[in-house]
Amino acid sequence: MDFFSPEFWTALLSIIIIDLVLAGDNAIVIGLAARNLPKHQQKRAIIWGTAGAVVVRALATIFVVWLLKIPGLLIVGGLLLVWIAYKLLVEEKGHDDIEAGGSLWEAMRTIIIADALMGLDNVLAVAGAAHGSFLLVILGLLISVPIMVWGSTLILKWIERFPVIITIGAGVLAWTASKMIVGEPFLKEYFANPVVKYGFELLVVAAVIMIGTMKKRKAAKEPQPKAANE
Image (cartoon, rainbow, N blue to C red):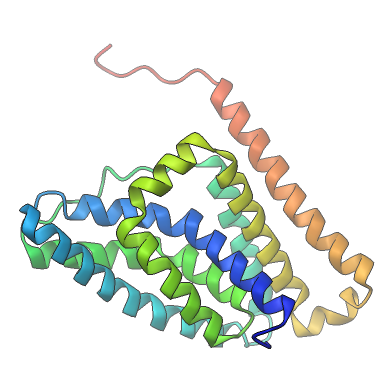
């Protein structure tokens, strides 16, 4: 992919949006993991824990980029990403199960493990949006690092104030998923017609946003179960 091509910059913009929506949540985990440490150790735990998480994520993303070259796996990855986009819209993520580390090493270990587990959606999304470009993968990681380290509070405030960010993020994920599916080599003949290709991409994005939004509204109207002590 040419550095000066519109496709490169469109893919990079997609990765930035994906990082804003998905990596911001991981930043909350990083803050929670280091919350019990003394102030002077918190910054070190966050920096070194994030560095370890980024190395793991870089290796995982490059592996997924290579994996997606295997025939048929673009469809599998695309369908998984459609599901991730849908879940982003309808699920409220909690972090109550994240244990705060009592020492610097414990906090770093928690950050690396939690990010590896929670970052699977981010890895797949960035790998799909990069279209096999390792330069885009590296740029995506460089963008996600400051977001994870410094952006947790800011991202959380943005999402609470402008919930449409989640919808936009889900739309970008769905669009990335649809591009992965239409990019599958043995399906190319079916999407040779631009109308069919772009129509399919638009349909996937619209379906994810509509179904996810309807599900979320329905869940909001349902009565919440009362606590046991009430």
